[in-house]
Length: 541
Image (tube, rainbow, N blue to C red):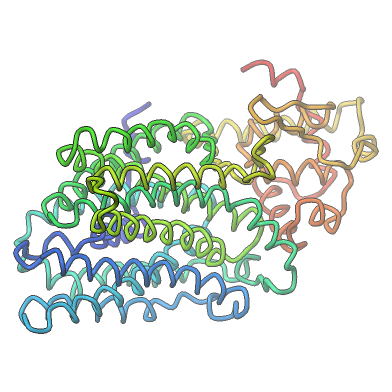
């Protein structure tokens, strides 16, 4: 990879830098204790417990409330209400600062501050998610991943500033900065996208299908959150462990984000959250089985490793939610609120479970043993439910909706070559005397692609192979290819919307994007372009 292209990949912009600053300041959400730059002597076990409990409960409730609010009252979410998130976030920090100086009211102020910070943090996450989802997939995913990488750099840079100064810089300087980034970038977003114009109650069938398709992915990430909550309960008495977990988690996020960006540039990436969790599950239960054997010295490294994986999973959660909003034309706040509500609620359940298992004696069983037994049991139960319970456990299936897709970004030189090749392909297609556009429309109107659980896609006819070859050449997403193929087979907008369980307006938006990427204007040009691709090209890679 050329050095110039590498620098272009890693070059930040307003969105990625603003999001990076927010993540760095919000790093307490990684561990859940009071912000690591507050005085350590202030962070007693009682203070940390009160702060986390208030913060985490408000965060999970805010996510669920956002999802319900969007469903019944979608109007307010069509605007970027930065002030609504900034005010509680600012007041929360004021409460924390006040708690440092007012000893007799420290605990009440910390609890109130935790609740306000939880509300503000959830609000800002919703704003960032709407921003990433409303951008083109290429731009939104890049800004999200790049912002995650730069967040680690900002986080470690904050250690160079005296803690007493950082406490005041956060509400007075850093908060206005990343709030301003959202305001500026939101002005460039098209408010007429289907995801913003969506009225959920007008098509409840679509939303039922969304919940059906995505709850397993949310449950898989939530299981990781549950484990992190348990480990938090074990180490909450030692703020030093919390700082160590923060450092290792942010470092891992940096490495993972940069690696993902570099790989993404040269190849398509398709990640399945539930499949990844199945692979990770044996290591997860093995770690909890070893916990009572190795004791307290093992809890710190285990917590660090779990939070590192959890941090990466949260990034994938945001990418998947943004993809769902674009593909299905649904409000990003709804799908992200649904996902986040489940994930953070299970995180809270893990913390409460670990706290009670550790504090309450059970038949003279040592606390670590009790925590390990409880964790293993609940993990097994969640895995069983995640597989569909008694209903589907014997024949587990996953849908394409569970997969996260990152279409490879070619260097600029390759893009220019693709643009030049498009005109040649169209001229060749129009002069060809083989299959005509009318013949394409006579093919079966059902979706042509049949995907198996674990194998490569199989194609039942020439059109589906040509569509796949065109997808590879022009780097279309899986949903865009699906819509394109259904259009080529003569399906109407209403028929495609019914088949894919989305609104007709969403299909029209997909069609516009397809035509823009292919630099065409008419359906006949699309048919000609599809016919210009040789199905045997699929075997050339």
